[in-house]
Image (tube, rainbow, N blue to C red):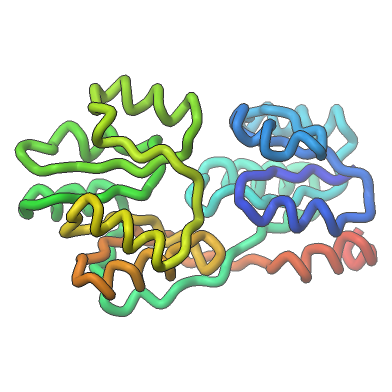
Length: 241
């Protein structure tokens, strides 16, 4: 049995190509709705829970296609596979050339930079970490583009973010669409994660550069992984199983 830890938009591509039995888990109810066709289970497991899940479901390989920034999920899954002596296959998106961007190691470093600036900032980093920035907003204008999910809206409400500072819409988007939003809100900066080629990062950067908006990118650690095609070859042809 294959355990697929879903999370990225490429999850569907992987699922369409798999020829073996699998269990798909996702972290949110939105993920369950999006992949309803594939009978996903909503689970957020710690390390010990992952060990139990692998044992209970007789998992013989784990495919981690969770979000690039879900570091703890990937760390725990990789270690659980090591303990259980089963293959761990990590999907990695192609990285984006960040030339012309201001790059940061993490959210806190980015926040420290923003605190020295003025203007309108468009955040496209999701809702999980907006509290880091919102607490230091001061008289700057912060706009948050988030997924149209209950979890995301609730997080914004928790931070007392007014509705006119929330854009709830699901991407990724074209360069033109990103430009339209930047122009509509008269953004001076756009903050994004380096979510890879398929995550919409290139389109955001190009839109910003076309308008003279400054792109701020929260980078991720370099990681070794596989593409979808390689993962499917390994699983379907039994190369390591």
